[in-house]
Amino acid sequence: MNQVTWWRGGVIYQVYPRSLMDSNGDGVGDLQGIIAKLDYIASLNVDAIWISPFFKSPMKDFGYDISDYLEIDPLFGTMADFEQLIEQAHQRNIKVVIDQVLSHTSDQHAWFEQSRQSRDNDKADWYVWADPKDDGSAPNNWLAIFGGCAWEWEPRRQQYYLHNFLKSQPDLNFHSPQVRQAVLNNVEFWLKKGVDGFRLDAITFCYHDEQLRDNPAKPKDQRQGRGFSEDNPYAYQYHYYNNTRPQTVGFIEELRALINRYPGAVTLGEVSSEDSLATMAEYTQGEDRLHMAYSFELLTDDFSAAYIRQTVEELEASIGDGWPCWAIGNHDVQRVATRWGKQQANPTMIKMLNAMLFSLRGSVCSYQGEELGLTEAPIEFNQLQDPFGIAFWPMFKGRDGCRTPMPWVKSEDNAGFSHTQPWLPISAQHISSAVDVQEADSESVLNSYRHFLAWRKQQNVLIAGDIQFVNAHPNVLAFVRTLGSQRMLVLFNLSIQQSQFELADIKVNTVLDDHGLATGHQDKLQPSTIVLPGFSSFYAFVD
Ligand code: NOJ
Image (cartoon, rainbow, N blue to C red; front, side, top):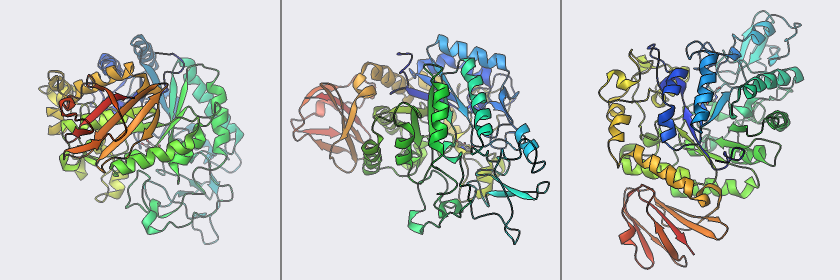
């Protein structure tokens, strides 16, 4: 692995620490649990882990509400545990990317506790404060993603403060140079600890319009695609004034200047904007901004060859020397096996989906449990933990169904995740897909995942090659990856029905079938037609 450019085309395995492994028997995963599973993670042949937040937090948004950026929450362990984690991961050649939630803090952060006291303290302008309108109502029409008005009243200041998520997640005022410096100091603390990079939470939310202009209404037919519930009034506005403000690029450049002092460290931005593909391109241009960015484009319900092609082509047309990162699942959306698989999800389909993700041009985030093909876990209302789900039930059931504990051993209590009842229930379907069951089956989703990533490491064209799409049957996603003189044809049948691909003027040179997907269609190769069984994948070098 090249120590500086590892991230280009690298595979980043996302660990949701509450749910990977509980080492101390409190029902919640922790850092020692991650350390215990590093051999397993190394066996997946991924390049890095991104660990969702484990910093001090009242856990209103399960760690995305930080009350001290420089401390580990005792629920997850100690600083010594984290130092051990970095050392142990590095021994196994796994990079460690941590989550930085810069746009907002917890309302229990010392900065906010001071800021809210008065209009003239040292930190009075560290958050976004505004006077009420003459009628006492909120300063403008901005809405919070997790429900309701984005403004909350603070009696001590007789003002409102802005929150784009929960009211316990006040928004920092990035227009203040002191805020930006304080944030960068926190980031540098972790660089000094030896982390290899940062996933930047909600990076498009850092700035707000200082004139506090109202967001315009969005027509009904356009209220989609942000990765959040369509039954949420948040989708009724264009978020021109509280998201993706022009100043963000300046902050990103300040951040990159810091990061560059620690060679090898990378940044991965979470992009959610009115035109996320354009924003991904803008934020990753050149050498002075983010290394890579992902958006919610492949995290929605849209699943068709045409949609995936259109998304990737649109990005490719504008990304220039920027760099994408693709994800088809994470801790914010329904498990991909259910979201895209619906009733048809089966191991063959999941293998194909993982292979497709790993074959697009860019880096990849693969969410824990995708290597097992886990489906969305059913969660009853009285089991809900996610405040987003509690607010929007029953139209939107929140994010708990993708956050349930990993099933390690089928026959053990709580599938080997914990000795005690876990914080979220483990579904029966997950228990029968446990790691030990899949390890014993050479054809399992898990073994296919490992095999495919080992094979991919040898295929530089999949890591660094260009991508061009090829016309195909509507059920088939077809593209060619090109690196120098090497051209690899890649086909996926996204449907359960058999399909065909007409080679036309493409001349197959070598069919590649040692990637572990075991779909056995090589013998079906006819002179000008490739027969693609339902949910199959096909790789070949072509002239
Ligand atoms: C995006 C994170 O992925 C999500 O889990 C969190 O709730 C919001 N940002 C707020 O930090």
